[in-house]
Image (tube, rainbow, N blue to C red):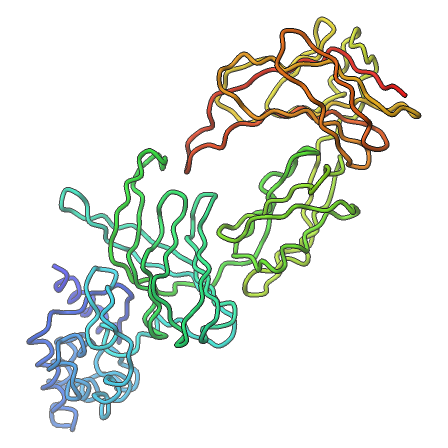
Length: 499
């Protein structure tokens, strides 16, 4: 079946004056190679059309894949004599029909690696000479988007074709002992990059990468400038992409350049966060990790804790030992570069939750206005002299409440009467933090209890002051599984500043 498929492709290619594809299978050795040799006799001008047709139909420009007989010098002459242009008809004769036998013996393009249909390359690249469509070469930094339609075997004996796309980057060019980065394109969030080093010949073996759902390639090889990337493609066919049901198909694949690298751009994962929270910068290309430290908040001297980007396309940003300034900020990414030295942009807008007013009645006898807080994933209620975050059992994200407390000059401590309402059996991380106007912070101890209890802390800095109430959740499993169901409540009874 593969031979007949190849023959149809070759016939179409001949009509178009030449046909190359990354994942064609070569014809079976034997007669086709022998006819290519006969075509060589016509190379002296006596074979004419007969030699051309024999060389073309016998190997479709793939004299090398016809076996030893077909890949000899005569087979190359067949392409030279009968091909439309011996210098360009790479499928029939290589680059020079008169010397093609020697050239084909010297150019090590095919190395016996599996092609996209599961076959093995024979002689040279399995296409009859150099395959320009699969070239990955250059002494300067470059990247490419690699692609192949790969036929994966199924349990019922059939096959299913899936598109496989990877991006590859050569930050210093494809030169000996230089870095290479391989990326799974179209992956969900999470790991998707492999950073490796080329060998002394500018090649590599054992290049593997997969995303958190198991899609990727393993045992990848770069051997020779026109071999493309060959290896075993991995495809997760679980429709829900959950970690409990990974169904990984495997098939030999040969990926060739389809386009250049994608543009280098950056965006925030979410356009807002809270003072003690974090945010993520999503980039479209692998990051030059030496430039990650240039990220900063414009107008702020607070040190940032930066992580990520080694194996994924996300930089995680948090305040190192304090909190972000509250309000509208600008994240400076002007110094950030990708592995090809390209800039991601200048600034990204970020909003940090900030109530527009403070609670006027610190005893909460009079219900505070909703403008005195900003909430995430919850709906606080002012009732019975309390500010209440109701207990819920939900499939949802963590909750955050930022409460404006105001300020009282000359004071040094804050007393807070509050409690966690812990009505679920699933334990989740919880915290209450006091944030000063300059971003300095202090933890406010609180436990689960039947009634609110007093806690007193030192003011960490100048006002105004904000209380950040946060309940997180355990990280979900891989892929698209939801977080565990859990949501406890919180109650604020009163607060007061004191000398």
